[in-house]
Image (cartoon, rainbow, N blue to C red; front, side, top):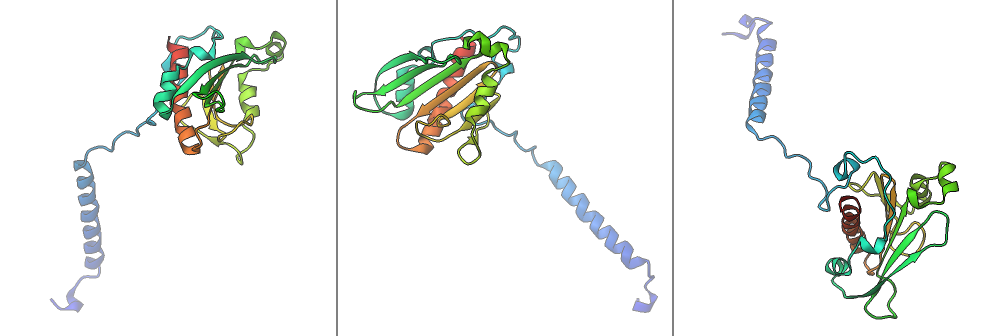
Amino acid sequence: MREKDIPRWLLPALVFIFLAAIVAFLFVRGLGKSAPPAIRPSSIGAIQPGEINPDRQEPTTPRDPCSLLMPDEIEDELGIPLGESSFEAADNPIGEMICTFHGADEDDPPVVRLIVVFNEGMEAFLRQNGYSVDQLFAGRNVSDRYTKPVADIGDEAFWGGSGVELWNGLHVLLWDVYLQIDVNSGDEGKDLDTAQKLAIIALERLFNE
């Protein structure tokens, strides 16, 4: 067939048929593949109010933080021996309770410090004026320069780095409880990973036992 004998409509029709064939091929090929795997949660798991107790209505009763973590659990994560733990109730109206896990040597600085604040543990005048663990959490989350959000723990969480400043450590807000856990192994990346794992243990023990 000579070029002048080819109908003008034929070439666009052939192009359309060719493109339609490619689209159909890709569609059928996609159907043959297995569905993509669901997004997996963090290796440390997720702690959410509904998973802890879907029928929770009563305020959380304050509890000694030294009952939420065991020394051997910390030793397993950090691979170092610990000494004795010590409890302290901070002399402030927000009702901070602190459990410090010391190194094996008395001269060693604290290895882990767990701070827990309960709405129910705050002075009545604070609660009557609308102050809660939500405001405490927000106040410690000073800025993006010093802190970064952490996913898959509680309602909200952020990491403030290793150290002894108020914003340091892992901070978790869950229901009516605020938890801060400082880990000081000398390796900040390891500190964050360990703090996440220990926070999961403490929260599960607090809300499920």
